[in-house]
Image 1 (spheres, rainbow, N blue to C red):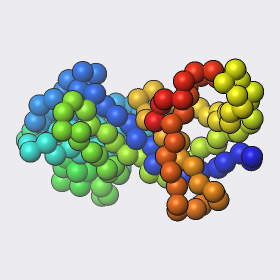
Image 2 (image 1 turned 180 degrees about the vertical axis):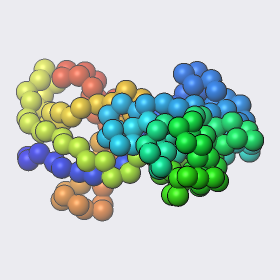
Image 3 (image 1 turned 45 degrees about the horizontal axis):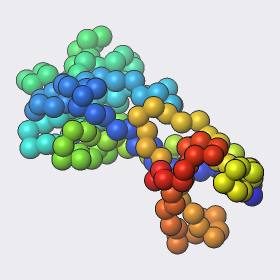
Length: 178
């Protein structure tokens, strides 16, 4: 078995218990997402009426200063030079000329929203491991708090015919995570 290089979508799940601002319409929060490349690791997530969620980079496209969280009537505002952006990152007023980078969101209908960071590169190291439960394949990779992980199995690298498998999170633990 060889090491795997991949560029997948990372999903950052935000619980409303941890981010209570997002439990109400017009709630907005600026947050650093650990493990995401520094060019895009600080985002602003905003909840609008109708359970519409938006996530954009907080880095103003004029000079790179962080924009404030969304405020009704003001939008996303950069204090450095006065640029304003709509909730979806579009420029409302310059001097910024280009939109903030936006990210896909998904609402679980209850108590959390997830933000997707596409095309992130990572490395998974593999080795065979003998355990009390028998031989197992050890997958080693850096994890990020708040991220969800799945393990997919296919017969060939790049094969579209995959199946998701349960896994253990410790060497001799039960194979019950998915």
